[in-house]
Length: 136
Length: 136
Image (cartoon, rainbow over all chains, first blue to last red; front, side, top):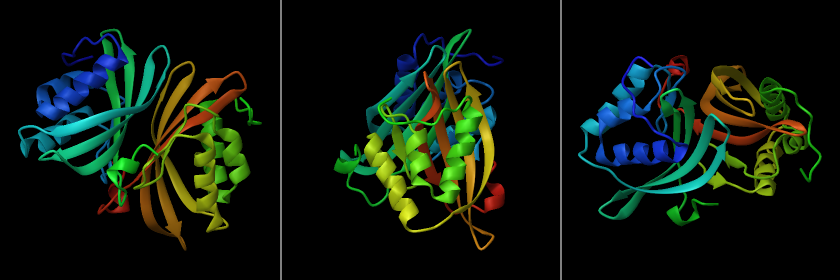
């Protein structure tokens, strides 16, 4: 890894730090939890971003518009191997305590020498569906 | 595995058979390449489906409306471990040879005793973006 990274011991830790960074709109932490290479980011409705610098820039752009994001997260499913984990998370985006949008995210974490890092975030908006029906 | 499954030796094989089944609208092959448990399917804009039977039913419903689908697929990225693989695929949905929609899919494959099977398909529509810009 060329950049300074967080040293996270488990996929659960990366997942928790990712959503903390997302909610606090912390671009520095976001930059420190993504791997440098073989990374993929898809924001809701958007095309794919494949370069580390472009991914970090995309998060910084999102964070530029707000100070903090209110998100209720629910872990829907996780599959694990020795050095890779795939988490599916429902993200309820709140606005003044009300659910404004529901996003489904597939997050992929990998184990490197320095610890676990994020290598993929693929998010999609759930359209025309009440939030209560998200889990099935 | 309770159901009869295909015996596929590599993630590449599952990926190829998945898209062949998708294009031929073959619900039987689709049923035979998904694992029975710990499975996740998100169709574009839709909520998450977590049960094997519901996932297979969702594909059968898609296939009910058409005889075959014209799809150009491009493998964008793949990450592999001993028993798990994550493929990101751009799916150009064609209509009379023209790109009608571009979908990004994260497909997760796992190795079981019987071979490699699909455990996740998370698809999202690329909105307001020319097809030519899909890859970045």
